[in-house]
Amino acid sequence: MFCQRARQLEDDIVKSKVVTGVHAVVQTQETIAYPTLCVLGLGYIGLPTCLAFAHAGHQVVGVDVNAETVRKLNAGELHLHEEGLENYYQEIRDQGNFTASLEPSAADVYLICVPTPIQQDKRADLSYVESASKMIAKVLRPGDLVILESTVPPRTCLDVIAPIIETECGLRQGLDYDLAHCPERVIPGRILLELRENARVIGGTTPSAAQRAAKVYRSFVEGDLMLTDATTAEMVKLMENTFRDVNIALANEFYGICESLGIDGLEAISYANRHPRVNIHKPGIGVGGHCIPIDPWFIVEAAPELSPLILQARKINDQRPHDVAERILCAAKEINAERIALLGLAFKPDIDDLRESPAVEVAALVANQFGGEVLAVEPFVHLLPKELSDIANISLTGLDEALLTADLTVALVDHSQFRNLNPQLFRSKRVLDPAHLWPKRTN
Ligand code: SAJ
Image (cartoon, rainbow, N blue to C red; front, side, top):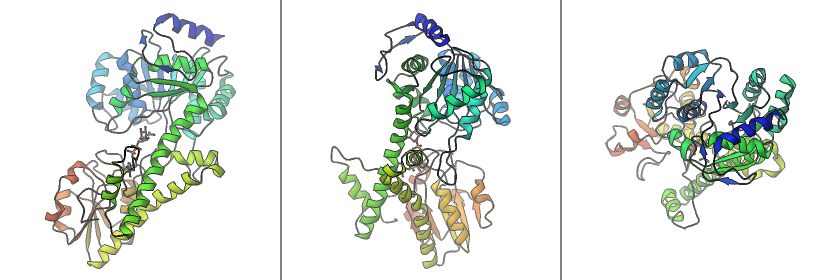
């Protein structure tokens, strides 16, 4: 009944076409309600989301367990790099709608934006979601709304979050408070733009929870809002990233087959993609980041008997860094190389994010087996990541120095800065291009 009163209040202040229920698509809505928000997790998703809500007029408290993150943000500094975020943050600070905190405080809406990694055995590690749910339970009041943005295995809202909250504070989803899942869908490098423009799927544990969540997002999301149940929304998000993983595995497999036939795999893929219903992805050194190599495992965990294709794609993409490292070591041996330059460590082009990066994995495999020196070039960072910092024969090196001193140069990441180089002018005896930066010849 508390939820009903909260919904009624919001309905009264939302002048609009009303969301028409589960499986509806909300096209336009003019919102004048400004519920307060408390966002748990201030990473690449949580922070920009806080700022988007604050910009739209909501009072937002962002919570993070990292004291340094909270200190920096309250001092006006950012702890991460994302296109346009610096200026956006200064603008929001001037408005005064956002503060960072170590503890959650009472709000109308709670958003969970914490990481969901996998464990050694490839099962989901939901410990951050669990502890965020416990933190929320301490301040949750009847009539509030909880929205999960983190990517999770199917049924997490129903089987993990709702029971934790009920055990911790006695409030029941659907009766005392509302619970919904609205998975983030933005891509690093375009986060601010995509937050605003992308369509969002919003799944409620009840239809009215989805409708309430849709009203909240409508304050800044211009894309369609697709309403459904929570488990469908959880599955939709996993299917999106799994589609990409499987397609990249197919591209990697095609490329290897083309190579064995002595033909140019990139040319073959680009011609196949001229068919109006074909879109083969780009082959490369493997799949990185904290989403695409992780999320398919959540489906495998939920339905192991029904997911042989998804599992195989994961294995194919996980094998890529090993094959690339082996090829580099063979080439180094052939030319008696003393120094190898590895261009790029990030998990994809033009970002500073090295987490789950196949380039870092290649660098570690090469450095551990190579007798000479490995010069890692990564213009987006100032320090080697922990996976590499303890290896004696690898160092972070400037691009010019690496190109001047290496015997073998290898492109691992398609950063624009590298793409514009002419490999013909390198001093090294040999150039390898498994990331496909430069036209032909060097793969
Ligand atoms: N990659 C390839 N070949 C390709 C495309 C990508 O090898 O054709 C590699 C990249 O080099 C990188 C990895 O895949 O190592 C992932 O890169 P990405 O750009 O495909 O995706 P992410 O992880 O940055 O973001 C994805 C996005 N999902 C989809 O495009 C379906 C994004 O919209 C999600 O919000 C994000 O995952 C997430 O957080 O789940």
